[in-house]
Amino acid sequence: MSHDDTTKALADLMGVLADPTRLRIVFHLAASPMIVGQLASSMDLQQPAVSHHLMLLRVHGLVRQQRREKTVLYSLGPTVRARARSIGFVIGKQTVSIAY
Image (cartoon, rainbow, N blue to C red):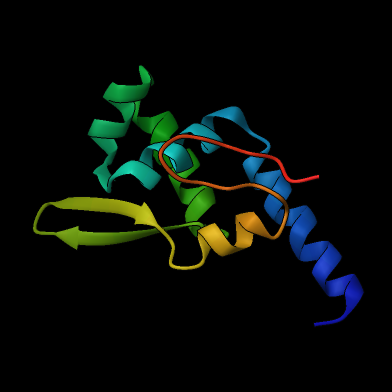
């Protein structure tokens, strides 16, 4: 990947994670996979709003979904921690440290 491609990819990732609600969703999913209703309840948000943010996170490869009968379980994508680390964030146990 060229320097320009890397820069664009990191800028896109930072843009997605810049939204506080999406970042909170990532922290919740770092602790445990959840369904939309659980996320909405734990974050005191409406389910359609959470679904919208999950869709954006999924499009960017940060969240994956797994259908279980009538429900969809959301979890972090397989590379999300490595991608976040590449911009200086450590995701896990609802803590963030910024590397300088």
